[in-house]
Amino acid sequence: MEIEPQNESVFEQVELSPAEQFQLQWKQQPGFISFVKQKNVIDQNAELLPYAGMVSLPGWASPRAFAFQGLVVVAVLLSFFNWYKTRDHGKLQNKIVALQAEVQEEAKRQQGIIDAAQAETKRILGSSKPVVWKGKTVPREEALQQLESAIEDSTKSLQVYTERKLWEEKGLRAEQRFWAIFYSGTPVVFSLALLLAAGLVASGVRRDYPKSNVRGAGDYYLYLATAYGLWPNLGFLLALHFALSGNAYDLTGFSDTVGPLFWILFWIGFYFLLLRYFAVVSRDMYKAMQVRSPLTEWSLGNKVLVRINNGFLLMFVTLEVGFLSLMYLFYLISPHFSKN
Image (cartoon, rainbow, N blue to C red; front, top):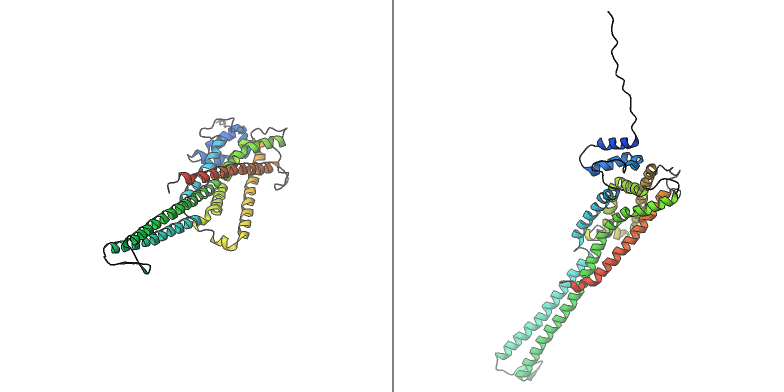
């Protein structure tokens, strides 16, 4: 009996192009939240980012939209919550409460003088006996006139005192609003600086590597800074809120006890972690740009790291100065429009 050989199916392994690999990675991502899927793809395939603009991926966000979602939105929400919780707390609020107590105390004192003068006036009007005023007998009309004058002086003195303290309270409230918004807004400026530094990073990288195709450096920076920086940025934001608004939460008692050394170490540690974040972003940017990375990550030879650091610092200082100037103008004019 002759046995016919069975046909064997031969499966050839097809090698996918980078663009097809990128598409496949996107399709294989679990879940339905596009931002999370995009973050995962970027984390796993930094070297495939150049193909992000070449293929159509449903739900894939542009670099700036992705960065805005991951860096700025959370900063705005945190800052709004921080402003809401701290706008009427802290040392300035204690001064306002103390000032209001002083006004109430002065009002009681002046009201006591007025009540006593009115009682004496009523007594004089209801009595036919000679009026003794400050140890000597005086005409009834003179005593009543002096009592009326005392009432008018106390009323006027209380009015002038209240108006002066009210204006002082307006100044304190304007200062309170200034610092509440400034302290709550600075973390937003921090995240905006991360986003807007992309232009400076891109132009700097193009000058450093004129012979390489690094036109997408700004986009790569935004993708990587957001994908890797989602949680680090949250940590930076919380640290900034602690440092700037901690007093309103009664969180800085320890630091006030320790003194300036605590804050020196705090800001050194903050900047070191920020540099560490930038270093990771720069490392993956070399992969995306297909440019040879430096031998030592922590050196001036890491040009991308230098560009990211300098671009961020320049953008942060520029935005912060503008924000501070705007808030100072608000501080100057707000007492004139305040109803309190």
